[in-house]
Image (cartoon, rainbow, N blue to C red; front, top):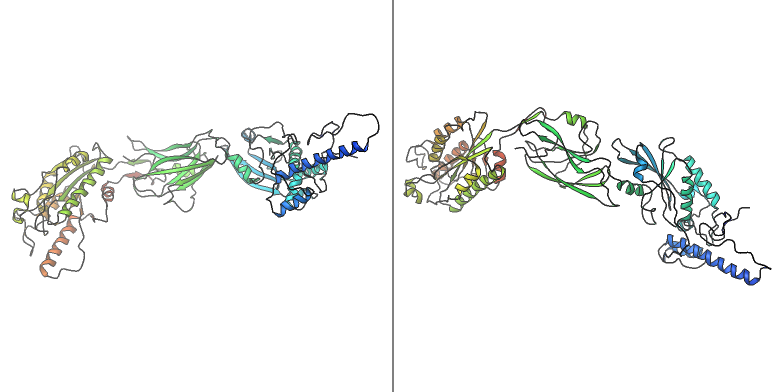
Length: 616
């Protein structure tokens, strides 16, 4: 007949003290018969040891006071309520044994299983290791303890009390039978592959039957004890799949986690894949920690929704993709992205939150790499000429037009301070002498024109300009400004061919030009300047014609003269803005600058990826 410890029910091994609970099993021999006093003292010591052992187990279960579980546990303790979690000193030593870091257990393997003996059952979690060394968690087989050991109590609280080693008033669980039941479950449980490694996670300290289950599992040569640093999942913390996930997330990154972008050679325009390291290999996260990385990407020649592949390593056809996101990006505009790392292979795009594609796209990496454009063709030089109406009866309107022109030029100066790709000039115009403008009485129709130069220099020149209000809003001296513009731009910049310069005339006006002959109530140009002829010469010189003006709104004018003036103004602005019209209040300076940019071209297919640097 097998003899067990009278306190913790562990089978005896012939030692003086129980190797589990530490109670003394054999004393020194004495002469004479055992007295009633000796028996009473021994019985009292045994009751104290048993009660201390059970209180220790009850403290691990710790149901809330007043709950049904608390009342049932109190009854199992013989009427003594469970304590506050205090464990008597020396009652149970912590399990020791050879263990191996999880990273070393995964190295060189394609599949492993993680085994956990938890208070709620036995959990076997499958994990596959990718070619890049990324652990990918699979399904978890969970078996309740009652299915493995029917002798355990059917009540969840009392069953956990038994798994912690407690006995109380319950029938003791036969330890040998418990071991055999666990061994039988292991023999029938599926492994990842015949002979595959099973990584045993250490149970929480103090749970005696869970320790025994782990010791049984460790007898299998294919089972290795993991040094997971967590010491088991304590009561209240998720076990099984959740514990394996927490563990895998704290492993070092086996490879750089990179964002695949493209970069353009500044000399040849050739397009090459570019790998931006978000999280370097070897990075280790603490439990429940999240690391973040920020990167600025840039849009291509047009508004698009580029793919954002996150890879485990450098960009080549054999590198596995960890994630594939997609984001809407404005043409040539920067976009600041934030990625979060939650563990090896777990990368998420967390910012910006808006404008993201609703579902994660899928794309073949080798096809992406082979589908890049061969070359990006730089846009031609932008030669911009602005005219601005500085007169009129509405001084606020003239000031707004001048401020708008300054803002457009300032944006161009910020994009290209040296003027390598943009040259800009300007002409300001007022009224004729007949129209009684302050500047006109001094014989001034135009501001001294600023010929094409770097935008920063034009911006400095515009600081000296100011509006000069007049008395009428019918026409301006715009026709003289157009005539001057045609003369100034009759010759292209030195060395620039027709395809190497994009020429744009932007008319920022409030009033139309005066006609060459009187048009009803619309007065003619006193100098006989034909603005249509000047506009034709500008068009022949390769200029796109853009205008920025207020549209005619409201009901038709009540008198015929006003309607005639309105029709003339509408026809004039239609011709002046033949290639596009911008509206105050609707089109911002940024919108205008984007429209002015000559387009980039690409040889081959459109680029499906974001750019690592702005196209310049």
